Image (cartoon, rainbow, N blue to C red; front, top):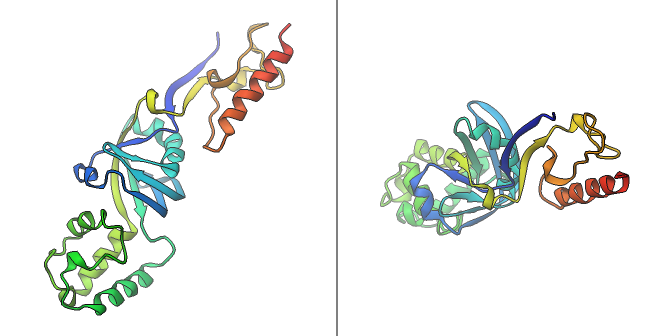
Length: 226
């Protein structure tokens, strides 16, 4: 018979471990860079838009990443690192923060990030930074500022699992493509058996590619059925 690779949800939102994530529910981030790590190994990186939900994260870059990490996260957690300011270096970000601090030097740290970050994200960043919320910005040390820069360039979360099939756009896995004639979609093992669409172990990123796979394989199969 045919070999079938494990069926998993793909192009699917992700669950995260952090409880503070719920504070960000509904927040959409644009022009950010996400990187996923399996231990110390980088397994996926992309630039674009993402969304925080009541359970974790979603949005275009997250859905694309899910197809790469779905098999990994089934076995163990994966680290998601978000660069909130990918267009500038650590040094440039530090200079930007210094400029913002210099505008009102007696302002409390918790009120100093309005021009740098979305309002909803600020309380979480303040909490994660380890800098006292009421501390005046002219008292923030160089070490604390560098810690803030590192946090903004590496805002980490722990992905524990994907959402279920009911929330997935496609599935990953299926009949091994090596056992199918790509010209006719007929089985190489059993005559007059044809395959098409998601039953085949083929999946792609968002953008209509998966629909094209479904249409093209269905057309090829239908054209060759005797």
